[in-house]
Amino acid sequence: MKNKTLYRVLVVLIASGIYIASAYSEEAPLTIDTEATCVASQCHDNMGKKKFVHGVGVNGKHCIKCHSITEKGKHIFELPENSVEICAQCHSGKYIAPADLEGTPPKIIASTDVFEEGEESQFHKPFGEGKCTECHDAHESDNYLHLKENYPEDFYAIFSLDAYALCLKCHKDFDKVMLEPRTLEHTQFRNGNLNLHYRHVNRKKGRTCKACHHPHVSENPKLIRDTFLFGIRKLSINYEKTGTGGGCGPSCHVPLKYDRYEPAEIMMKTTPKLGEDATYSELSESKKRDEEKIRLEREKLEIEIDENKTEKIIMKEYEERSEQ
Image (cartoon, rainbow, N blue to C red; front, side):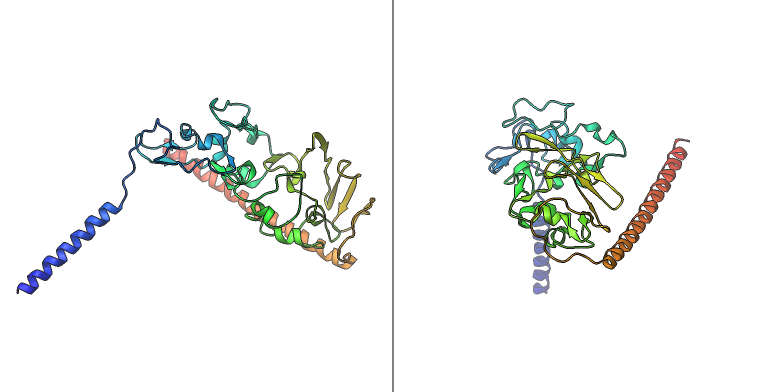
């Protein structure tokens, strides 16, 4: 009898101990002075140690410009879903950044009304979705422009996949595009089967992506720039898109054209071309594949548009019924 009683007491004590331990293991939100700096010896003192520091990101008195306090006096913050509007507080011509920030003035990237420029504007997907932090670290980074992964700083760069780690995060076929001198499928920027991405980038003095493409928004197809800086000179790309290719120049070279199915003659001296030219039959087959791919993509887009319209109609009807 005594053994049973002792056993029951032990069970109760153990259960109570587990309950008490679990209760204390749930950390209560820290009580803080939300008017004080966050970058202090007892808090986020590890910030500001990397090579490139975002002035507002490590200034402990400006944290609330990006992080909204959900409960005053508590260490509970709400992160914004759309970071473009947050970043535009400093990186647009409409607003003035805080005067006490260290370092160079914030670069003007785009005003908040950039999304009202019209359907002609082409957006880099992360920027268009308001996800600046897909590419940039909001606080600090060892990569220039506070980028989260490696990306070349200069106009020219020795090619390696590691140098373009940032691009590889999203562009899953990037390695195939940049490693194959000949292709009929991995890129639309080709003259016949001559991979022009490879020709531009994969070399000891390769042109980096930003030489031709804008990282945020452009009014040209494929985010092609109007101009680019080469030293202190601003040069025009003069890109023209056609149904089966395009052309550009004169800037880096004489005016040149390319065509995926009827290769254009390259009227300039170039480095040797690796691989063999595609046959007429191979080019014809690639054209059929591309046309089928475009047809399927258009069908998918039309379905998405119809679904969005249907959803908007349903929501409108629901709102009208709610108001009645």
